[in-house]
Amino acid sequence: MSLAADRLRQTQLSTTVEQALLRVADEARLTRVLRQRLIDIARGATYRDIAVSYEISINTVKTEIRHLLRRLGILCRHEIDHAVQSAEARTTDGASAEHIHLFLRRRWA
Image (cartoon, rainbow, N blue to C red; front, side):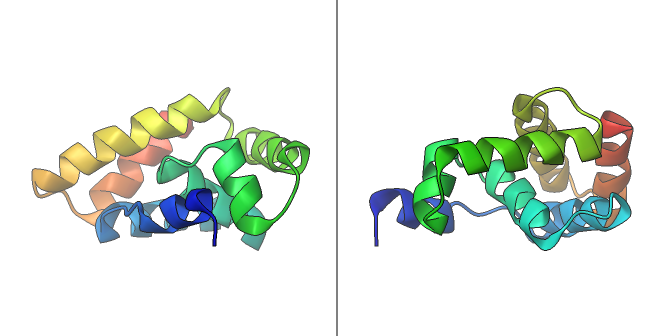
């Protein structure tokens, strides 16, 4: 297993944030692949990490991420990073999955 694949699997999200992201994915009717890319990006994976981990080309990853961003109505993947960092900070303050979900939906609405 490659270093990129190991790193992709080791980075963890809090359960609360992951549940909220999956709920956003359900509401956006994301495919299984796009749901996984959302989680991968939320965990801080680069395009290369994703490509190596799933044994697909970087161009495929770029296309999938472009579709993901369009479905969520956001402009760049860094918006996911910033939202997840803010959401993680809120969970340490005791926010529930419902509050995190609402926070993410407002950011990406």
